[in-house]
Image (tube, rainbow, N blue to C red; front, top):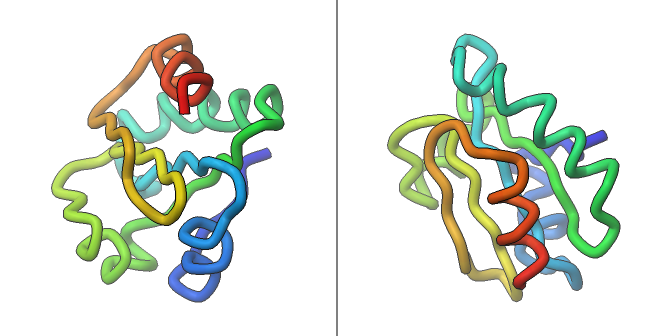
Length: 103
């Protein structure tokens, strides 16, 4: 299951993570986000080399603003506290797997 990222744990869980991290910026009312939810959860269960989680932009708009999230779903891959890859909109599971395997 994907980790729930919040304003309170974002620095420790994402920015200071030893592993690369995929953050899914989403909201419950977003249809495309609902499509991506099971994909993100599946990746979280399948990929041990990376940390995978979700951040609800309605509950934590300040974090989304810092990372210039303009539309959702947006998925950003962090490595060493920096964004190294970004996806906007519905993505194929294989595209996310390939990107995560490459970091």
